[in-house]
Image (cartoon, rainbow, N blue to C red):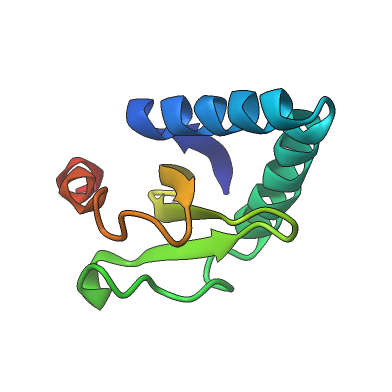
Length: 106
């Protein structure tokens, strides 16, 4: 599995989260980066290990993972041997706002 490849919006969300946590406390942004990299490494190795998301039909094969220490959810899909990150967001806020991005995965 190659990647991860971020959709533009997902990359912006990820970068915003890193900046947000770093502003809250120096070093937290670095921890977010490290945890996301570790989580995505596991997803690259075992892409089907995370549960499918509830916001879209199971036929889209979109999955989500949560970071260990932060309330961040990462939505991803495996397409043609590449892990694509669809969204990175606070797990309790705005569920499903990213679903319009699914059409770009097909």
